[in-house]
Image 1 (cartoon, rainbow, N blue to C red):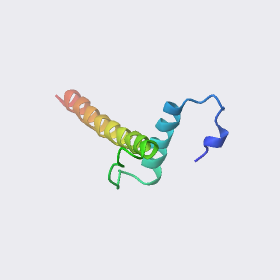
Image 2: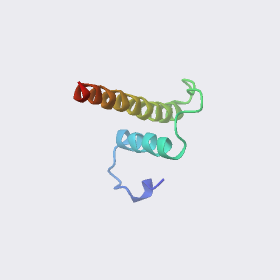
Image 3: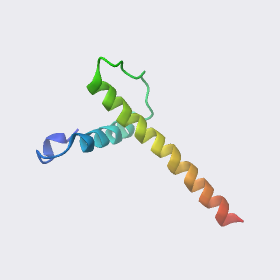
Image 4: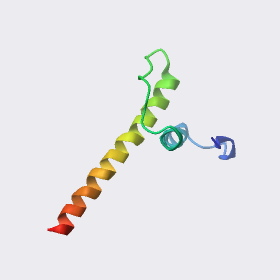
Length: 72
């Protein structure tokens, strides 16, 4: 991942978004269990990946809804 090319002021929340997008693009849907509470960094990364997965599902649902409206 190209995080080394980001400005040093990049917020952790933005890095997590990029991480989730990267994992979705390179691995696809989440394929591991959520890390435990004693691994907060890994858990945050897993949550970011899961959020992207859910956003993709929401996107597909919305497109299908719009297609149905257009076809009626």
